Image 1 (cartoon, rainbow, N blue to C red):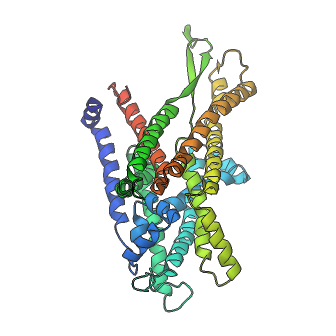
Image 2 (image 1 turned 60 degrees about the horizontal axis):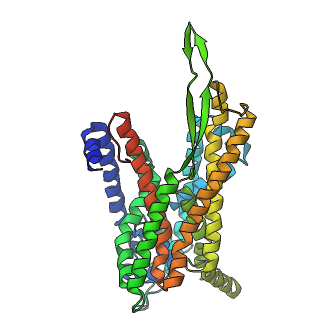
Image 3 (image 1 turned 90 degrees about the vertical axis):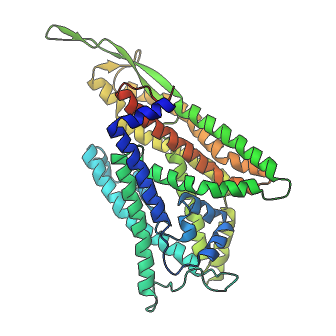
Length: 439
C-alpha cells in the first residue's frame, strides 16, 4: 500500500491529478466557511441540531448549512436536476435522440441539466431561507435570518442577494466537481459530497461517543463500530463482486494472417450503480420534508397541520422513512444499472466485433441473456445496499442511541467513493506497469 502511494507520487501526471483533487477540496472547504450576512449562526446551529432532517442536509453540505454559507445547498440541486433529466430522457423523444448521439448528445443533455439546476437552487435556497427567517432564537427572540422577504420592497434586494449567493455557490461547487472529473481523480460531484461528509464526521463522532443517555454511550459506540465494520467489509465485497460472462471471438483471416479466436469475458458487477442510488434516494427523501418545513409557516391551519404531520412521519428515525428509503434504494439501483447497461450497448458491440457468448445467438438473444443475468445479480447488490442503508436505524432501535441515524448513508457514500477513487488510481498505476493499491 505504501509502495503504491510512493509510486503514484513518482509519476508526474498522476501526482498532478492527486494534488489537483486535494487542492479543489481545499477550495471547497474555503467556500463552505464563507457565511452569508444577516444570519444568527449560534441560533441556527441550535435549531439544526434539533432537527434530524436538517442535520442530514448539514452533514452532506459539510456543515455549510450551519453557517448558512455559500455552500449551504451543496450540490443537491444539481443531483435533483440530474435525476429529473434521467427520468425524462426515455420519455421525451428529443432527449432520447440526444442520448443516442454519443458524447455530443450527452454534452447537450449535461448542458440542459446545468440550466435546470439554477431554478432548482433558487427554489431550494428560498425555501430554506424562508424557513429560517420564520424561526427565532429562543435566547434573543430575533429571527435566525433578518431582513428576508422577496415580496417586500424594503427587503427585496437583500433577499435577492441571498438567493443569488446560494445559487452561485451551488454552481461553483458543480464547476469544481467537473474540474475534478476532468483534471483530477474520481467523479468530481461524488468527491465534493465525500469531502463534505468527511469534514462533518469529527462532530458526528463526538456526539456518538458522548452518548445520548447515561449507560448507553459505551454500548452505542461499540454498536456503531460494529455496524461501520460490517458496512465497510460488505461494501468492499459487493463492489468487488462480479459475474464473468465468457465471450469467444471468431477467427478472421486478413492478408494471410489469422485474427481473433481468443476467449475473453464480460465482467457484470453485482453493484454496477455504485453509490449513485443512495445519493438519489437521499435527495428524494429529503424533498418532502423540506416542503413540509416551508409549509409549517402557512397562515392556513389545515396546511400547517398537514405539513407538521408529514414532517414528523418523514424524520430519519421513523419506521416509515426507513421503509420507503429501503425500497427507493433498491428501485434506484435497478433503474441506474439499466440506464448504464443500455448506454454501453454491449450486444451490438459484440455483434459488430464478430464476438459471441457460447451457446447464445448474437443480437436480440444475447441482449435478453445479459439482461436476465444482470437482473439476478443486481438483486443481490440492490438488497444489500437497501439493508445496509437502514442497518443503523435497526441498531438505534436496539441501543436507543439515536446519534447513529446520520451514519448510514454517509458511511456508505464515503466507502463507495473511496473504493471508486482507489480503482481509478489502480488503473492509472497498472497502465504504467506499477503494482496497484488493490493486492
